[in-house]
Amino acid sequence: MQDWILHVDLDQFLAAVEVLRRPELEGRPVVVGGDGDPSRPRQVVATASYEARAFGVRSGMPLAQAARRCPDAVFLPSDRPAYEAASARVMATLRSLPVVVEVWGWDEAFVGARTDDPEALARVVKKRVWAETRLSCAVGIGETKLQAKTATGFAKPGGIARLTWKTWLPTMGHRPVTAVWGIGDRTADRLGALGITTVAELATADHTELATWFGPTIGPHLRMLGLGAGGGPVTDAPQVAKGRSREETFRHDLTRRDDIDAHVARLATEVTESVVAEGRRVTHVALKVRSAAFFTRTKISKLPEPTTDPAEVVRVARVVLDRFQLDRPVRLLGVRVVLAPVD
Image 1 (tube, rainbow, N blue to C red):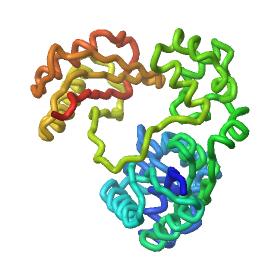
Image 2: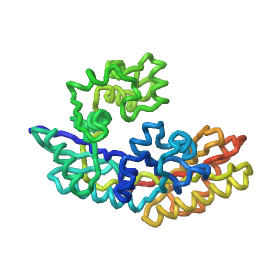
Image 3: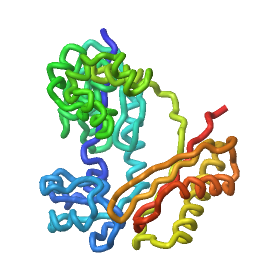
Image 4: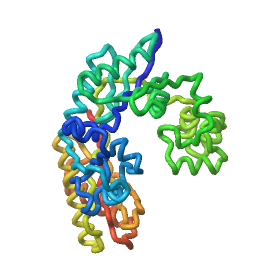
């Protein structure tokens, strides 16, 4: 008997929920996003069925571009309540098993279990989820969360795969560092400056050199990621939000500073009121600005003291806005607040 972590990832979740409601769409390319009208500007793909992905349709792509790539696709509006309800049924199904379930979103969860046959458990998970919800999932198995989540990439769609300490480097060593969960393009560029481009090179890197470049905490942590460690234990404790955000993509680019100010104030007020209603206090305010050319910048500032006053959050948000060079039309604005720990 050994402790194992399973990563359960639902296949094409939003599209699958829509097909369940409309069985006639089975096997057809389905695209979900916005209000479902690809002729309207500034709307993006939330998810696409595998049939649509075969035409190059991807999440985050403008709906209009998706329509050009796959003109025969069925476009549907996002229906958040339906997805939340379907997700809740899946998570309830997982919790009915003798395992620990840590929810990571609508369509994924980590499962912790002690077993001598994790593949058998994975088959039970897949069978039970299908029987209760008619939704398909892939299951990755690992000795850490990182290994399990990475294994899911080899399991999709609808399969089972395992990565362990023994198989991590033989499987992942030749791959670029961006193949590791948690390492993005910017970190990869900085690692590249040190001559570290593959997972194997990261796993064998000098941790003191990494600490010099990335700091005493992040540097050694990156090396551990290269070795397949990371993610911590599976816990079923309720997750407490560390922040909350509101953002909006505008139908027409903003060019006037007073319009930008007004939208920042509105978003800051909305997000603050939502967290204050839950008894939380705001400690930091971050602002995201995306230009019409899709150049995105983010800046953050700490409040003098934690607050529940929307006016104070708006004031600091405007201070942060002053740090941007608003010399291009603005396509998107976002306000994120960081929250004080729960007492």
